[in-house]
Structure formats: structure tokens, C-alpha cells
Image (cartoon, rainbow, N blue to C red):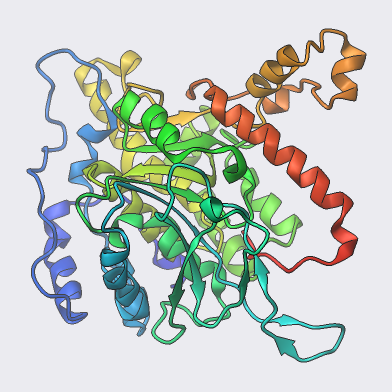
Length: 437
């Protein structure tokens, strides 16, 4: 999907393109009509109760934006929130597997074959997965390409993932585009865990060590249920508002196999006058998508996911810039406009606990967590704090729009950092490769 096909999300009339959405779904062979679960609120509808505008006030009006230019039905289906091909088969197979699950944890470890030694043939080396979080026993799933070897022998049974193999034929992208294919499961969990009793999911990046100290039930209770939220994530550690810096980080670190597409995506975003104005005013919202907690029965959460996927389809292979853009276009900009019309802007469109369907918290490595750990260690002296690696930097301040990270997230971050340091010391022993984040 070329970047230039991107149209501003949330900026076109919903009814105008509804027929195109239905036509695309029908052309893809989808049985039945698209979801119509709830009446739309008219743009500009005025709240009579004087209550603050919430993001979900506008999301139900989010339109389908046409523009798929691929002959791959599985890829074009994503433009309309429809699974096709091997991923649709995976979703069907998950039903019986989740029969006893009210919430699930999942990760995606799509990886290509690795080379065994310099210049050697490419072989299927065993992959090591990080332990699954607690609180999701028998409901923690790791999606892998069919035939991938996985080694969980050193992991206790309660922390092992249930492996779900995905056929490599009929994917939205070729098997080698493992990052692209993995993002479908990452961004659209409600299309895979479709049973109504599966209320929530917790996604972890396949390289994340946060699972070592996470409990799914605790995360869902504190980040979603206790806040009336449907979508929860961490603010980015250092680029929570300076979201365009993510492009430079991606390119400078070589964290893409599509540098030209990433560069073109940045060019497109910088040419968007409304988006740039928002960023100059400090309105950027950048998340660290290694941990995502979502309720599947939340309509605005599902709609945000589909807006994120449409932006991702039209950019490079990294998903975080697409999230920031889709979130602004699909949620923040419409909410700000409506709040201004209602004269409730000062109290509206919040991103913290209890302010709407989105709950964004400080990063597990933010200064909030560093301060908490320093207090626990009684590291009152600067020298002691520095020796413990607990120095404070304004680079790690959480953004004003985020809530303080919960204590369990800080603990998980501390455990993850310690595990990463231990692994670094033994890296020369030669561990199996992990999927690229």
C-alpha cells in the first residue's frame, strides 16, 4: 500500500463511503453485512448536560476510508476490518481454545529462518520465548509461523505460552515480512478473540521481559475496569509528545526493512498542516506499544484499532508513528473540535484513568518508577542512587496527559531491566534469536 494513498482519518463523511466499505467486504467474500452495533452521534452534536467531552463521543462517527490498492485480498480486508486467508482460519481455530478464558495474554513471534554460521544455509533454529505473565494460565497464546521451533523447556509450566501455528500461505504479506504480518494480531485482537466471554486481552511484545512480573488479572482490573477504560498503554519513555522523532530513531537505528516507505510516511505527516499544528502545540501522543491492554466489548476501542490498522497499511513497517497519527485524526482532533463547540474544552478529551475509554500511564522506566524504586532502596544519597542506576533525567518525565504508572508496572519494569542486564552478561553463550519488535 503506497503511502500517498493515505487520506486523513476522520475527515470525510461517514455515509458517503459506507457503500464502498460494504462493497469491499462483499467483494472479499465476507458473509453478512458489516457491524452496525450502535447509533452514530452526529458530528457537532451538543452535549446538554455540560459534561466534559470524552473521546468516545466522536469515535462512533469514524468513517471507513477507501483506498486499498493491493490485489492481496487478505491485505485489503484489513482496510475494512475483515480477516481473510490464513489469519481468518487462525481466528476460527481460537474459539475452542478460549472456551474457558475471560481474558487472554498473547504475543506474536513471527520470525524468518536464521543462518547457522557465516555463509551457511538458512535453518529453523529453536526460538526462546520470554515467560508468559501470570493470571492467564491456559489462556496465554503465542502466535508463530507453522513449523517454527520453540524452546520453552526452561520455563515453568504456569508461565509457558500455548503455541498457535499460522499457515504462511494466504498471509497479508509474504512470510519474510514477518513484522508486517505480526502487526495484524497486535493491532486487531478483537478480530481473533471473538468469543463474547473473552472480555479483555493483554498484548506483550515477543521480546518484552515485562511478563516476568505481570499479572493479567491485575492489569485488566487496574488499567481498564477500575478506570472505565477500553484501551490502556504506556506513554513512550522519551518520545511521548515529540512523536515525529520516532521516524529518526527508526531510520538511525536501522529498525526497518522499508526505509523508503518510512521516510515517505514522515514526509506525508509533515505535509499535514493540521497534524503539524497539533504537534507544535504539544498535542502529540506517543505510546510504547510493547504492552497493550484492551477490552474487546468496547466499541470505541475496536474502532480505534481499525483506524490504527488503516494508517499502518499506508505507511512503513513500524506501527508507532501510525498509532500517533490515527489517534490524532480519529479521536483527539474530533473531540477537541466538539469540546470547543460545547465550550467544555478545558475539561475534555482526557487520557487518564476515568476520563474516557483511553487510559495512558507513565512508562515503567519513567522518573515516577525510578523515584519509587529509589525510595524502596533508601537511595537518598546521590552517589548511592547513581550506583544503583536510579538517576533522574527530565528526558524520562511522563507527559502531563498521562497518569502515574501503577506500582505493579514499576515493579515489572525493574524486574525486566534486571533480566535484560543478566542476559547481556551471558550473551556470548549464544542464545536463539528473537523476533524483531
